[in-house]
Length: 248
Image (cartoon, rainbow, N blue to C red; front, side, top):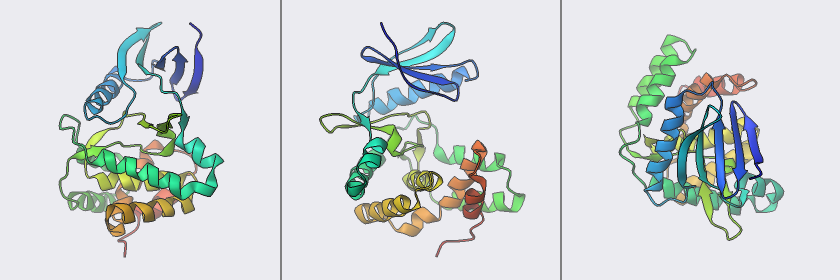
């Protein structure tokens, strides 16, 4: 059967093969991470959210692979780029899907707070800044809603009938959903879309009744964890958030 390459980067090759989508990992990927991604996705499937169904985890030519249903459609990111006149409408659909996620609970997922503490500790920021970030994180309260971990329009497939499927649950955890909101805002900013980020946050707070400051006060924590990726060109912007004493 002919393979159609969809994506190839960072040690992963994603291709379509008939009704299947195959995510093939190279030898640099730890087996535990691959199996955990499959397990996360299977657990999220049980919530009833629209996600590509896991079909198998297998080995192809000595490389681990996750095989899911192929979802026919277009990413929401692509739709937003070719239809900027309706950006607000697209963001509202995006936010409503995000609100649907935060209503779910998946008790067997790892805890976001533990993951964030570990990443703060591993960051290169000075000890006093890391201490402040740990204290800020502990002050947020304990919550256990489903968090995607990388919720952005490129991870949403819109089918020809308008249904929206959520991809890539590798970073799924349970925790404070406002941390997911802060990360989405951050991802828009890092992509050079500050206006989109601000519109997104305004709309999210209006639709959910969330106090904007509750999201903003988490941004230094999320920025510190993002710094571990060491992506060229991001450091100055991330540092500007991490060093914020408080949001007014």
